[in-house]
Length: 322
Figure 1 (cartoon, one colour):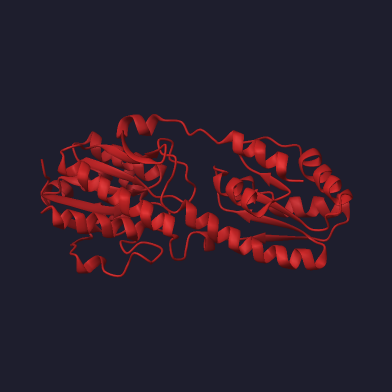
Figure 2 (tube, helix red, strand yellow; figure 1 turned 135 degrees about the vertical axis):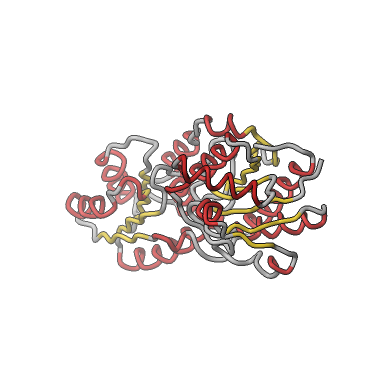
C-alpha cells in the first residue's frame, strides 16, 4: 500500500543529521511515487499552513549541513484542543495521509496527538540527548558528543599547562547521556549527572586528592547542565583543594555543526525505513534502533516507555577515572 502525500516536519531542539534524514525521506518517497510536502517550523507550521512542495532538488547539498532546512520551534498552541484541531483540519484539507515527525520525546508526544485524531504518523528520533526510550540511539547524539569531546580536548591542553581543574558543563537538562559519554571519552575525573546521586566530597574532592597523590596535576570535571551547579562546583573545588579552577559552559555549540559520518548514515537509514513503512501501509510507528538494527516500535507503546539509563557504563567510568 502506498500513500500519496506525506508531510515532513522537524520539531523541538534541532539535531545534526536532521537534514540527512529529510534528504533520504524526500528522495526515496519520490522514487516510490509519493508526493512530499515540507512543513516549516514544526507543529506551528501545520497550524499556519506554512507548507510547501518538496522535490529532489530541494534536498540537494544538505546532507552535510547542521540544523534543519525546515526550521524548528516548539508550539504551545498545538497542544491546545483548538491548535490540534487546526493542524488536523489542514492535514485533511491538503490530502496529507501521513506526517513524518523528526524530533525528541516532546515531538513524539505531539505525533501521538495527531494519531489520536486520525492523522497517520511516523516518528524518527532526532535529539542530541539520546533520550527517546524506545531507541538505543538517536540522530544528532554522536555529533554532539564528538563536538563536546573536541572542545574539551582543547580545554585540557590549557588545564594541563597551568595545573588547573576545568569544570565543563555540557548539555542535558534532564538527561546525562552526553555528560556520560563525553566524560568517558575525555577521561574525566568525575561525571555529575541527574540520573545518579553523588556525594561531592567523596566523588569529586576525594577523587581529586587521591589522583593528585598519584602524580596528577590537572583535572576535568563534567557536569550536566540540568544540575545547574557548574559554577558552584568550581568554587567548592578551589575552596577545598586550593587548585585553580575554571568553569566552561559549552552551550549551544553542541547542537550545531556538520553531522558526523555516523549521524549521516543513521539518519539516511532511518529516513528510508520510515518511507518503507509508509509504502507498506504501516503507520503510527517510531523508527528506532535496537541491537544496532533499525526497527519500528508502536507509537502508543513508545510514548509510555520509560528511559533506562546506562548505569553500568556510569559505574565503569567511576572505576577508571583515577
